[in-house]
Image 1 (spheres, rainbow over the protein chains, first blue to last red):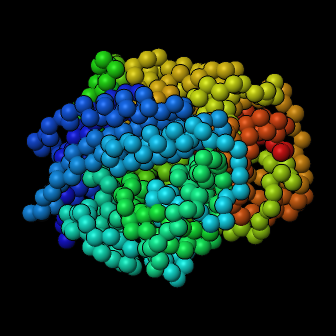
Image 2: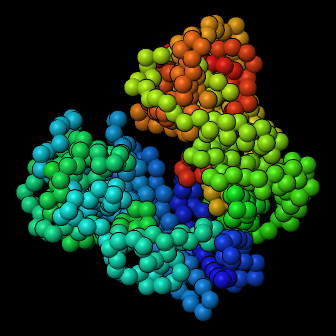
Image 3: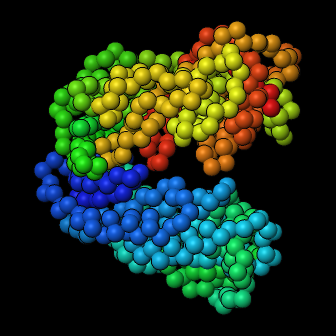
Length: 275
Length: 317
């Protein structure tokens, strides 16, 4: 079977202090187990992305963050896809921010140009105090849950399920269906240069209990990539802001997913109550 | 300044060719911004195709691909890049056998494939609890990876100097005259406070960054007394440097525990040490720099090949 996929894209990215506009088109052919790809020479080009929104978000982040910005990468993109008779358009906005305060680093990823949460978290990070033990029971903010969702996938306790949430289109332009176990029905294709493969998209962790105790301290962001179920957290308890290491042993509740995060193939996450 | 690049890469497995990619484009820097498109530089494409089809190493390479065994793979990446008036052609082959891999060049492919096969054939017999209990001898130039992380990346980040043995030098020696921004590239002393001279980029879509090109470790008059009870490092699977914590992490994927005449293969282990700790741990070295097969270095999502050369190196943490 021969499958021909084509993509035209236009992206503007802020990266290491430089604005870079990228316009390209490519095609990928899969036939008898062989994957080939190359630029699509005769393609009509998509219009260059107006970088005004990107410039504004960069300006907003830089002006509102008082701690050191170690890395700020933001992108605004548009892509048209073709697979046989199927065509679809995709837009994407991403912000990746690494902030440093003393010996601490916080990593923040957003799937939109709404940076109000970044500003709030940067403010908290600027007040980080001394190390404390992780609270015995703690809430994990949706962005923390998003980051650990791929780790939870292999070790979920019986009261927790990992699912693919329905919505949007996959790497072959097919509707992303609800699914709860492999074989995953949808395809992941981050670029025309990557062979598509089946993977869970829109991953989400659900729990039989959805009521989260709002009085508990909260882990609001990660201070390092999680190592299995061990994580370095930026915690907030009343007015105190502190770093702590949590070894996740139990998930007691997870609220309805409230936000999508650009983690791996995409994650919908809610707030969790854990011990 | 115009930068252009053409890259072909092929993935071969025991069943034959699995993936084939052609990529090209140009990036034009103007007024602090970059405009990048997939415009074709035909001269570069001819250079890449010439390198693949005409050079003897690749003819040999393609002829030897069929005998790949189950669990083995080769990724061949040939690129030609233009920055200013300069054209640079590069060929890299990533050889994998079972769960091990090395980065090599067409000229060294057959020897390195046999080498990695011989390493993969011996399964680990035991694990070590703590690498600090024993001296470590870094063989086959693998000490270059340790110093890539402990001296090279800190130099990229302009970290403050630490005290290394006086007999040790670590330099970045770009194998090209012009970097990816069209500026001259030159050798730099990485222990002396120098920052790598070359800005490099993985593709036309990427922002040029100050990067290592070719790490060469040398010794002059170093002490070296081979301990009879030691760890011999054969192959390093990866490494990292964190500029925030000044910590270096090295993943040793093939090593032997040597006890006199007895040698036992060790399970993979990880070394995590501060940069000053590594500088203090370097106790001796012997001989001329040996070519380590190489490193694919990933920084900010940009993967580039970096050459690696080091003499026999002795550390004791």
